[in-house]
Image (cartoon, rainbow, N blue to C red):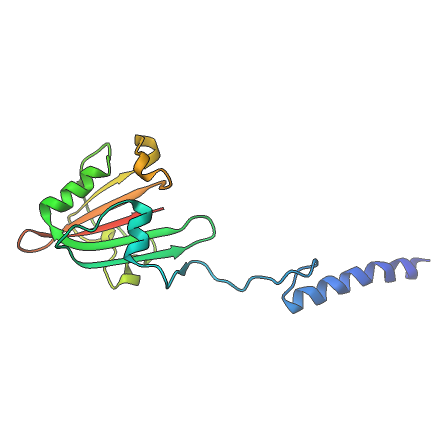
Length: 167
């Protein structure tokens, strides 16, 4: 009687073992081989601009955009070079409760902007930063955006590199 019970329990255990080895779960669904994060290779500046509801200013150069796909929330990156005044106007348009302020270089959280061939803005010395939660400041233009970071790096000859990161 005990042997028969052991055999009955062994059948489901073997089925589970075979499913695990074959890459499917017990219900037959294929297990995911995906690694996170991933980059959406088809997304660029246009997709990021549409999500953030920001515009790359006329005359801006070196515009780059990317979307990092994550299980919980995607990260949208945008960078371009413009004049210093326009960079400050963009920061102001985000409706942050605090103006751009100098941030000492911090360690990088991941290598997101590196995907665009850029330094991580939070690692730059004397970069100015502001962050905003669009829903918290009732910015209906960006109701699907939970957070936007803007970093402004002063370059030469009244030029600045703008880094925007949103989720």
